[in-house]
Image 1 (tube, helix red, strand yellow):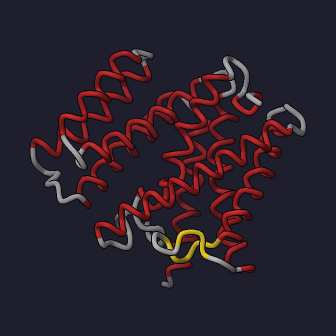
Image 2 (cartoon, helix red, strand yellow):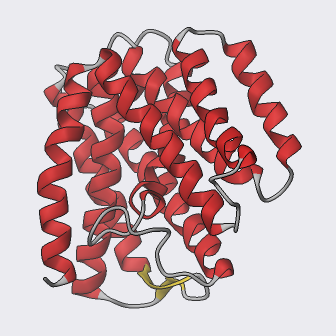
Length: 255
């Protein structure tokens, strides 16, 4: 099978599962996020050379799991304590743990809000639109590279196309949620697209320094969890901060 065929088949299997868990909410969704949080740490620490089948490796994986479970109960001071204590693992070991915690609890908290289903869909689809439109625009138009020293394949035209795609998608999701065509939602989509692209570039720097092409082989055609979720892991915490500032209103009403 070609890589494209593997990617398509993987998506056909994974996308319905993710959408079902997201739509169901509750512990179905929470279990998915918690499992992904553990997987991210396994993958990231393995890349850093940690032996994950040791007591230290198990502790590293339990750290985000405990943070996620505590966050579900709303005990944010305890979550902050776990975040601070994770620094005791030292650099760069604490990196994957912190990335997993921040990305995971952001997705857990967003789904628990009054407009949680649509807000989480908003973030996920804005990231997907940014990634897909950036790829299509970059291939179609080409032009100057965005960050040739970090990721030679990315172009400025692709970046702009990704932002435009997320802007449109933001408006579409907000409209589907009953908010009508909202300029604020479009603006929020653009902000999340910029965050997503920064997350993608940050993971590229991480892999380049380690001299690896993919973070793992868990998802055929896509690589590892970090390869697939790098953009979301930065966009989700930023979306959560925007949602926090918007109070009980939907995150796309902030502006």
